[in-house]
Amino acid sequence: MNTGDVTRTALAGIRIFNGVVGLFAARRMAAQLGGELGEDKRFVYPARMFGVRTIVLGGDLLTLRASDASARRVLSQAVLIHASDTVAAAYAGWRGELPAKAAKVTTAISAVNTVLAVVSLATCRRAPQVPSGHAD
Image (tube, rainbow, N blue to C red; front, side):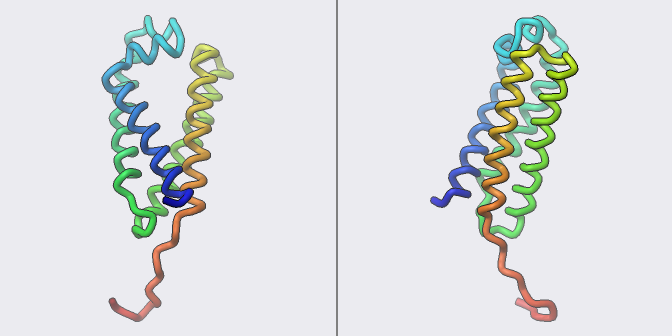
């Protein structure tokens, strides 16, 4: 297993774990992030939607092979998704839209995911290019 495989698998595991927690234990997750979130029932529905999305994205990474033509696209999307999650969490904390603890935890998790996605993409082998005009 090379570095890209390890980081991709780690990212998939984090995604699936967080997705399952969001889907099946949204209230508990909210309570762990901050008491106010645990009391707010409006948090549950978006957490479950986020959970489903995250499980699917994790599954994509687990079934992906670095040599697949779609690997670079999926990993590029992972960088974009996690980088925007990081910025959104930090911004929500800065604006006071999340409790300080929740903002720090979600920003840190998203930042780790971003690093894993960047390393996975950087180490992904490019699919062999077929010269134009040549059929397989």
